[in-house]
Amino acid sequence: MLKRLKNADVAKAVANLFWLGLERLAQIAVAILVSGLLARYFGPDVFGKWQYANTLLLVLAPITWVCGAEILVPTIVHGGPPGQPRGLGTILGSAFALRFAVSAAALLLTLAVLALGTADVWGSTWLPHAWLRSRLHFDPLVAAMVGALAVTMIFREPFVGVINAWLQSMTYAKPQLLTSMASAVIKAALVVLLVHGAAPPTRFAWLWVLEAAAIGAVLVAYYRARHGSLDWHVDRTLFRHFSRAGTVFWLGLICMYLFLKLDRLVLERYVSFAELGRYSAAQQINENWITLALMLAQTLAPAFVYRIADIAQLKRNIWRLTALTALVMIVGAAVLDLLGGFIILRVFGPDYAAATGIFRLAVWLSVPAGIEAIGNLVVLKYQAKFVLLAKWLLALAVALAVDIALIPRFGGRGALLGLAAGYLAAAAVNFYYIRLKLHQ
Image (cartoon, rainbow, N blue to C red; front, side, top):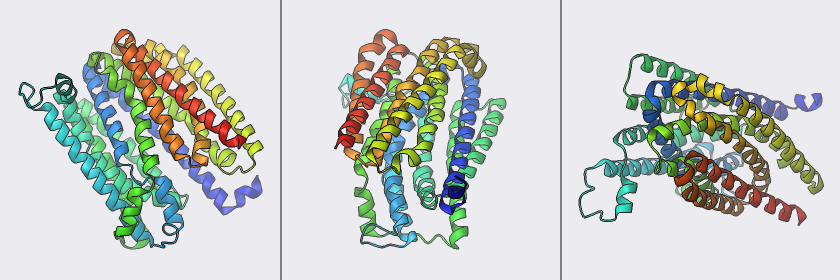
C-alpha cells in the first residue's frame, strides 16, 4: 500500500478523491441548510412552487449534456479522436461551441414555452385541445422562477463543463471543487441576507445564476493563467464528431434524470403546491442521503470494477460490493426512519410535520437505488450504451405507469411506489446484463 501511494498517479488519484468527497459533503450540507431556510421563509405553498421549478430545471439540464465527459475526457487525453490529432485549444473550443449552441437553444426554447404557458390565450381557438392547454399552462411564479434558473444552462455546461473535463483529464479536480465549495458557501450567505431582507421569491433564483457565472469565470481565468491565453478554436470536423459521439449515452442520461424527477412532475398534476412542497422537503433530504451513500460506489469503482480483468474476481467483487452497499443503505435508512420526525422538524419547521411519513418511507428507496448503482458499474465498465438507454427507458415507463395508477389514490406514497418500481426495473436489467456478459 505504501509503495502504491508513492506512485505519482496513485497519489494524484487519492488526492482527487479526497477533494471530491470534501466537495460533496460541503454541497450536501449547504443544500440542506438552504432548503431549510427557504422552506421556512416561503411556506409550504411557495416552497412547493420553488421545488417544482427546480425539478423542471433538472429535467431540462441534461439536454445540454451533449458531448459528455465519457467522450470529451478521453479525447483530451489522446490528443484528439482516433487517427485525427488535434491541439488542446481546438478540442476544448469545438466542445465549447457545441455545448454553448445546444445550451442557448435549450434556453430560448424554455423561455418560449414559458411565455406561451403564461400568456392569456387559453380561451382562444388556436389551442383547442383541453389536454394540451392544461399541460402548457404554468403558474406565473413557477414560470418566473424557471425562467431565471434556466439561465444557469448558459454557464454550467459550456464554461464549467468543458474546463472541468480538462481538469479531469489531468486527474486534478481541486480548482473546480474549491471554487464550487466557496461559491456554495457564498450563495448560502446571500440566501440568509435575502431572507432577512424579505426579498421576493423570484429574486432567490438569480443567486443560482450568479453562482454558475462565478464558477465559470473563475475556471476560465484559471485556464488562462495556466496557458497564457484562451487558445480555443472551432474545428468543423471535430464539432461534427462531438455532436454524433456519445448520443446514446446522452439520451440515456436524459431518461435517467427524467425518471428521477418524474414523481414530482406527475404529483404536481394531482395535489396542491403546498402538498408538493411537503413531499419535496422530504425528498430533498432523502436525495442528499442517497447521493452521499452512492459516493461509496463511485469511490470503489475504479479499483474493484473498472481495473479488474479477471471475470471470476469481478463477479466476487460485484456481489461483495452489492452486499456492502445494501448493508450500508439498510442501516442508514433504519436510522433516518427512526429520526424522521426530529429531522423534518429541525430542518424545515413545524409547517412540514406532515412530510415525516413521506420521509420515513422515502429513505428506504436508498436500498434499491444503491443496488442499482453497483450493477450500473458493470454497464459503464463495458460501455454498454444501448443497455444503459434501454434500462432507463424501461424504468421511466414502469414508474410512469405506477404513478398514473397510484398517485390519484395515494398521493405522495403512490409517487414513492413509482420510484421504487422504476429502481427495481433498472436493477433487474443491470443484473440480467451482468449474468449474460460475465457468463460469456
